[in-house]
Amino acid sequence: MEKKIKLDDVARLAGVSKATASRVLNHRGYLSQKTIDKVHQAMEDLNYRPNAIARQLYKQETMLVGLIFPTINNPYFAQLEAALEKCLYNEGYRAVMGNSENNAKKEENYLQLLLDRQLDGLIVGAHNPEIPAYHKTSLPIVSIERVVSNQVPVVSADNYEGGRLATQRLLDDGCQHIIHTNYPGGFASPNQARESAYRDLMSQNDRPAIVYQVPFDEPEAQKLVRIRKIFEEHPEVDGIFADNDTNARLALTAATEAGRRCPEDIKIIGFDGADMTRLLLPELTTIQQPIQEMAEAAVELLKEKIAGEPAVQYRTLPVKLVEGTTA
Image (cartoon, rainbow, N blue to C red; front, top):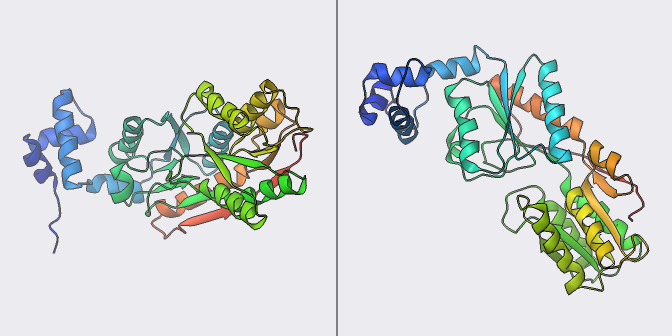
């Protein structure tokens, strides 16, 4: 039978007294950063989770939920976080928002809030699945559009259907040379299904599939450099299926720079369809994700996990093509 790890074991490994270890856990009194780090490291090494925190998580709810997303400087994430905050509020929760900026250390710090400061749960959409805590914790965590661990349920739009709708629309419009932008291969995200659909339809229509990899966390100026290469290296391109609306907007910029008219010379379709994008770029034809419904589903799954009930591992919601004038 596996030995149950106690606070005494943590204190012994950290080389401090049990009282000091307890003060670290409860954030009481002055403690040096060195002492705090030693106790946290011992907890990590022993995979120790205090019973008091477990009781708080599952029985004595704090009614606080953390939201970890890459940035709010993106219409999709801004609208998603706003929808989550409203859904949580309607369920009696308060949201603690933390933008990770794709910094793994920063994301780990927010996870520590769940472990040490007794948040009831986390809803995440950041890009760092290699963080160990995601893979060995059974605490209430739900992910949106990101695969962070087999233990964390995922809420996602129907990315494959979205990719199929976008590619088929370009084919129906007569495009012969369609290029797709997406995350680098190997990035664990449901977004990759958009590329899978694109490749399937191009194959079915006996046309080459060409994908330009555009990392999400690159500065926009660097993304534009990558997208300009589409027109430099493939002047025959007459259709672009961008994996998000930001890249679609950059594709419009690059097309104009290359002297290509849209939609006369080239047709462009995006993906996301956030309200702010529709307001600022109403001409963009795009695949719209059901952001409000995704937020509601994530909160519902998180409530199930907080209650200790089994949660489904994957929930997929329908998308739709929103007409503009770029395709």
